[in-house]
Image (cartoon, rainbow, N blue to C red; front, side, top):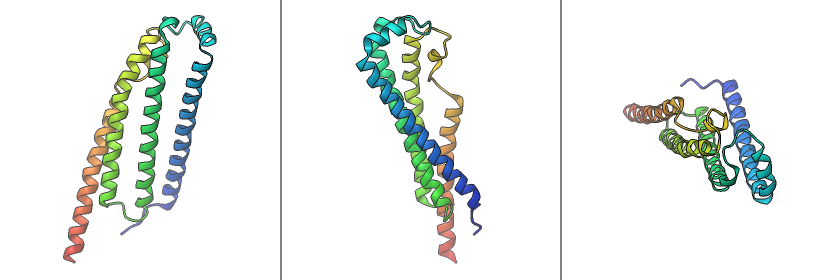
Length: 174
């Protein structure tokens, strides 16, 4: 059986670790902003009132809290996806067509579904506190590329499952 390109796998592993680090950093920033909002709410409101991005600073407390929770949930799902991809890449060097990899791809698909479902209320929340047309108001929502990634993950899971079954059947006949 031909082995995977070790240079490509090393580069992929490195990129996945970098991505995971960036996700963790983003989660820490969101957590830091959430704490700063709680601690310095009056000062934040004074600053937001002078910003043309937002609609009504007086009613933003609850929506900003929801926004922070949604962002943390999305980042958590993204970290989970990266960890599943790391396990998938690690097994690719040895034997990619195993049932475990099909299960990993299926879990990635479901995590992508969760991210897409979380992106809908994220968009509603962001657009409720930001002026229409602003970059902030366009955050989240449905994404065609995300829907295609979901389909791809589930199709690849079925392909890997079938490949593992075919290989097992072939090994049983030899």
